[in-house]
Amino acid sequence: MAETIYDIAIIGGGPAGYTCAIRAGQFGLKTALIEATDKLGGTCLHVGCIPTKALLFDAEIFDHLKHGKDYGIEIQGEAKINWKTVLERKNQIIAKHTKGLDFLMRKNKVTVVPGFGSLTGPAKDGVHSIEVKDAAGKTSTVKTKNVVLATGSDAKMLPGLQADDKILTNIEILSLPQVPKSLIVIGAGAVGVEFASIFRSFGSEITLVEYLPRLVPAEDEEISKELARAFRKRGIDTHTGAKVEKVEKTKSGVKVTFTASDGKQVVKEAEKVLVAVGRAPRTEKIGLEKTKIAPERGFIKTNEWMQTDEPGVYAIGDIVAGLPQLAHVGAMAGMVVAAKVAGKYARPIKRQRIPACTYTEPQIGSVGLTEAQAKEKGLNLKVGKFPFTGNSKATIVNSHEGFIKIVSDAKYGEVLGVHIIGPQATELIAEAVTAMELEATVEEMMYVIHAHPTLSEAMLDAFGSVEGMAINV
Image 1 (spheres, one colour):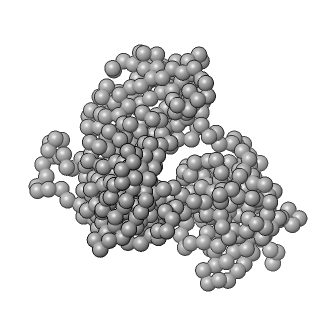
Image 2 (image 1 turned 45 degrees about the vertical axis):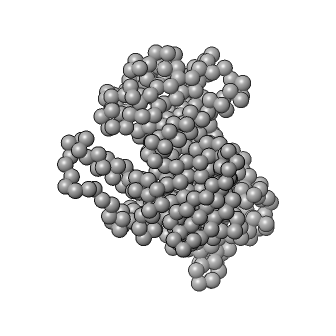
C-alpha cells in the first residue's frame, strides 16, 4: 500500500490548528492534525477562553440575582453560589464542544494523529517528514507537502515560583474546590482582570497588582480609567505601577510583598495568588533547530501569509511574532493558510482590524488605534464619545455606565479606532470591525439604521458624537 502523503499537516489542535484543519478539509485538501494531548481544543477550550467565559456568565447572573428585588423578583432568603454546580456546568460546556470538534474532524475528513509532532528538517523532493511520538513513546512519521505549526502557548510564571494549590495560573484557578475568601491577582491584562471580576462577583476579597501604570494597559487610556473606577466601585483593591518583590506561602495562604507607585513597600495576604503576567510561546522541542526558522524569544517570524523562513512551513496562533495571542487571530490565520495552500482566495490579517475583548464587568471591546497611538503617528484627529447613560436599552438592562469612543481621521472621516466599555461591549465591537474592514467613514456610519431600543444604537450615537451630533446626549 502506498504511503500517505498529506497536502497539509498541522501540529497542534487548538483554535488555530483545528480551524486550519477544518478549512483545509472544506477545500478538499488531504489533511492531518497532530495533537499531543488526548483532546482537541487547546488552551482556549479546556483552560482558557471557554471555561473562563462560562464562569463570567455565572458571575453576571449572580450579580443580577443579588438585586432581584429591583427587578421585581422575590427570592426567598439570600442567593447563594453552589460552586460544585458552577464547575460541573463549566465542564459540561467543555465536554460538549470537545465532542463537537471530534465530529467536525470526521465531517471534514481530517485525520487526527495523536502524539507530539516535531520537524525533522527541510522537505525532500517537496515532501516534509514530521516525527510523531505518542503517549507510549512510540514514534511514527507523517509525510506532507505543507506543514503548519500551531503549538500554542503556556502561562508565564514569576521567577522562582511554581504553580500549586496556593500559587495559581489560569489552569489551577479553574478547578479550585471552593471560592477563595481572598485572592491576590498579579497582572492586570485581560486574564488578570477577568478573574478579578469573576471572583469579586462570587464574594472574594480581591487585590489586583499591575507593574504598568494602568489596568488593561493595551487599551485606550480612557478605557483603563473607566475600568479602574468601576473596579473601585465594586470594592476591588487595585495597585498600578507596582513591582512585586516577593511571593511567599504561609500556613493559611500566601503573602505578597510589592513596592507601590509611591515607593512604599506593601504587604498583602490572601488565601490564593493568581499569576497572570502573560503567555510564553510553546516552540521548544519541535525541531526548529533543524530548519531555517530562528525564533526570537520563542516566537516565530512569518510573512503576511504566515510563511516562515523554511519553505513549506507555516506558523499560526500564539507562537507568531507580532500578532496578539488571541484565539480568533490564530483561527483566522489558519483559514488564511488553508486557502493559500489550496490556491483559493485569501487576504492577509491586518493588525489594526483585530478586535480585542475583555469579559469583565463592565465588558471591554476595542479595535484599531487608541487616541494616543493615532497622535503618535501625527494624524489629525476627530474624537467622539457617547456614554451609555444616554442609551435606553442600557438602562433597561441596568448596565448604563461606560461609553463608546470613536477615533477618526479629521479630513476624510476614516474610522481609525473604536473603544467600548460597557454592556455587551464584546458583541458591539463586531460592528466597528466590519465598518473598518469595509472602510466606512464616520459620515456613512451616521446613516446606518439601528433598531430601537438596542445597545447597538449607542454605536449610531457614538459616530454622531464625532461631529457633535449625537441625538441622545
